[in-house]
Amino acid sequence: MKFDVSSSELLSVLQVASGSINPNPVLPILEDFLFDLKDNNLTITATDLETSIISSIEVLSADDGKIAVPARILLDTLKALPDQPITFTLDEETNGITIKSSYGEYKLAGDSPADFPEIPEEKDITSITLPGDSLHKAITKTIFAVSNDELRLSMTGVYAQVDFNKIIFVATDAHKLVKYTFGNISSESTSSFIIPKKGFNLLKNATSGVEEVKMSFNKKNVFFDFNETKVVCRLIDAKYPDYNAVIPVDNPNTLALGRRDFLNSLKRIAIYANKTTNQVILNLTNASLTISAQDLDFSNEATEQLSCEYQGDPMTIGFNAKFLLEMLNVLEGDDIVIELSTPNRAGILLPSEQEEGENLLMLVMPVMMSN
Image (cartoon, rainbow, N blue to C red; front, side, top):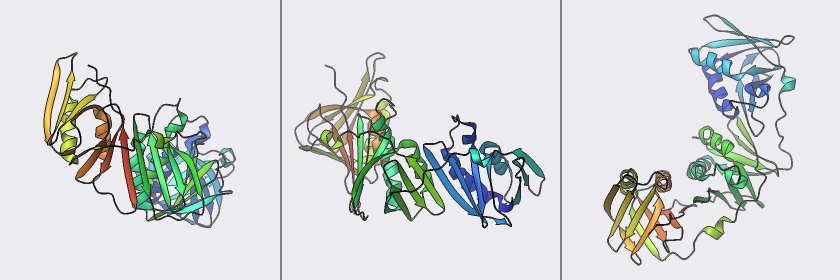
């Protein structure tokens, strides 16, 4: 097997695929890319058994073949080369690989392609087409709220609910929750599944600037197809909690204020908060919002006032500043609305204006204030 390819074009395809390679794989073969050459089309596969990425690139070749190539040494070689044509030659008896550039020749040991694991096939699938920018936005808006607690397996992924003409993505770690909905899709059925955080995060980088993504799923896997790339994720086999049950419906107190002013104020006040709880106190009256924090262990405290529009009863409520900052960084637009009911119930953060065809809701649990 022998082929010619641009070093920079090959590198860009390999860098996308390498996202699914685990630094400490359970099997040595999982440190490799699988190269499969057919009719001048090189298909490159990488997997960690949970998430697989398959990309393809046009090359110049007179023959076909397969080889597993160690990823790290190949990536390092290509990164160190300026853009130029390179030639790959494979000795199929020894699995030896030779790379030729204008500078010289590099030899590395490949592995048998027969040892590379099988990638799940698209069987018994349901498919829908998603706008690329909407999917990219869904990932950006939800991924930060996913739990890292392996004991709560269902919460370590993003819950996707396909409902005929709309799709809902939900992420929560029991302290914060994000629900992002967008329409303009067409599905003949309803379905729901949990996408692992790693696979969803890999999509974030890969789908930037992509016009549309075909999403297909069955009971075990979800497949994302776009451009010359496919991302395959094994679904999390668990029951997602009833997230609607924790979203308070009746929130008579409404706070409207500038997102950036609130964000910057919180950054300053959080410096003075207790490092264990990160608690900041919001004191709300008709015309103003007072934000304060104190760390009694070190006698540190800080207070700021912000102008706002507040409708409701005067109220004092505590939140974890870290969670509020994460949400404010992800929310877009100049102004936000916070809906509140009582100091011991969750607060809801919303953009003051929702984009057409989409709906974003963020929920944050309060930090109980000690007397």
